[in-house]
Image: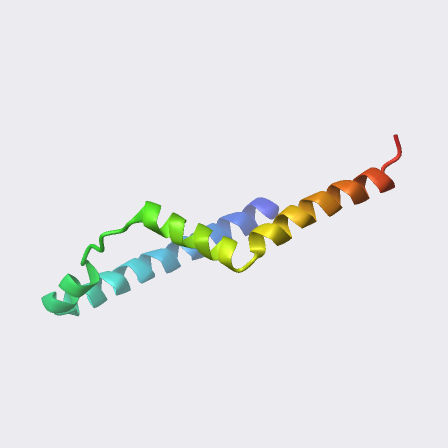
Length: 84
């Protein structure tokens, strides 16, 4: 009974995937090439620069101090509330 249900669900899911795949291929075939070029443009990423900007924002907004204070208070509260 459970196996039949799983087979029915799997068959239904696979049929939806086949329809979705055909629909996407038909849609992509109708997109003008200029749009495809826009979608496929590669953007140069500066990962290290993004990390530096995120860290600087973290420090400037005071979140670093809040994290340090939270660690200290959390460690102290854990010490007061643990048995052993």
